[in-house]
Amino acid sequence: MTDNNNHKVTVLGGGSFGTAVANMIACNNVNVTQWMRDEENAKASREKRENSRYLPGYRLHDGLQVTTDLAHALKDSDVVFFSIPSKAFRQVAAMAAPYMNAQTMAVSTTKGIEANSFELMSQTLEEELPTERIGVISGPNLAKEIVAQEITATVIASDDNELCEVVQQLLGSRYFRVYANADRFGVELGGALKNIYALAAGLAAALEVGQNTTSVLITRSLAEMSRFAVQLGANPMTFLGLSGVGDLFVTCTSPLSRNYQVGYALGKGKSLEQAIEDIGQVAEGVNTTRLVKEKSDELGIYMPLANAMYECMFNGGDIRQLMGNMMLAEQANDVEFSALP
Image (cartoon, rainbow, N blue to C red; front, side, top):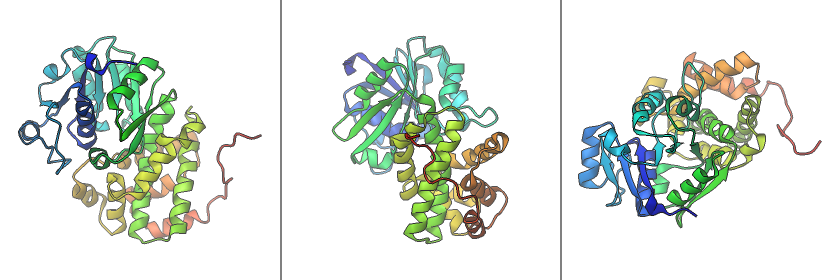
């Protein structure tokens, strides 16, 4: 096992999940610095020991350092967590690159897809950083529940066994468990895709559909996202774990999910712009829906749920009619992938 005291850790990002990760590491008595872009929020977090903008009401550990100085934050760090929205992810990775080396471990916590390139965040890290030691964290991890110390589990995905072990030690605690998985692509893609279906679930909740309907929505969402991911090279069994069905379940059933909140607002008649403005944080599923719709059309992958959400958000489609149309769609096999011949 590794010794946490030998590590210098940096968390890039001042949002809710970046703060939750940084605080967990600090609680394990590790030397950790959180970098934020916003000087006002950084100063308030240092002085009040609270990130009142994203995690109000939760005290930050006294050992957590907060700064807007990127060079200072990354100095001598051997583990760097990237908790940056996908839109700014490449920019921040390029900014961080000069302060990292070939042995630095880089871990993405961002559940999104880059526009234009259709790259996952770990692929962006491969292109922008001097290191090949790259991992991904994904799972059913609502930040507010983590800082409230609710029992939670996540997945660290990498083919670097030492990296997985280090992350398990840095984050592991009596309430937070970290499992390992070598299928980095599948774990990361699952984390991005489930945001589409969280939007759909929030919208369905606003329409006050029954539990039968919710059950259909979640199970067919799992079939749809795994179908898409396997076509791109992921392991279908990955979607039976925390980063697949686990993450899908929590984001489709919890009002704490930003994507669920946006979907709910749409279901209550608000425009997409109003819904996004109301939550005041990035909902990755909006961008992901558009990108996945385009990619599935290009590859000929059957994705009726994603297509319905795309029509609702970007073409003004009536969601009740779209849901009705789904019942007339192709009746495919119940189980998308089977271990039996």
